Image (cartoon, rainbow, N blue to C red; front, side, top):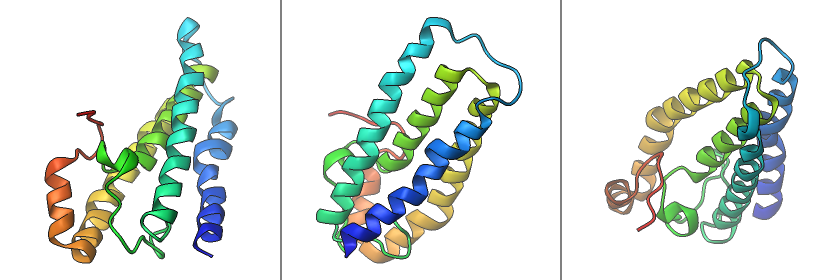
Length: 154
C-alpha cells in the first residue's frame, strides 16, 4: 500500500515538474540558450533519476512516502540523502532548469526560481521542524553533516 501511495503522489508531483512548466513554455520572451539547450537532457535525466531513487528510498528504506501526511517511519540518510538533505526538491529544480534551457522562455526560469523559494520556505518552516520533532537527535546530527541544497560528495 505504501508503494501505491508513493506512485500516486509521484503522479501529482509531476504536475509541478512537467505539466505546469509545459504550459509556461510558450509565454513571454525567450532567452537565446544556444548550445546550452542540450544540457537540458542531462538535467532532465539527473532530475528524473533523482526523484525516482528518492521515492524508492522513502518507500523501502523509510517505510513511508514523501507525502507529508504519510512520512517515512525511519529517517532516510542513505542514497542521495547522504549528499543533500532535499534531493527530491533539488531533482525537481534540475528538471525545471532543463525546461528553461531547452525551451528558452524566461517564464520557465522565473517558475524555477519561485518553485525554489516556495520549497525553501516549506522546508524551513514546516519540514525541518517536523522532522526534528519526529526523529530528534538523529535528525539534528543529520542536519550538521548534510547540506540542505548543494550536494557534497565526500
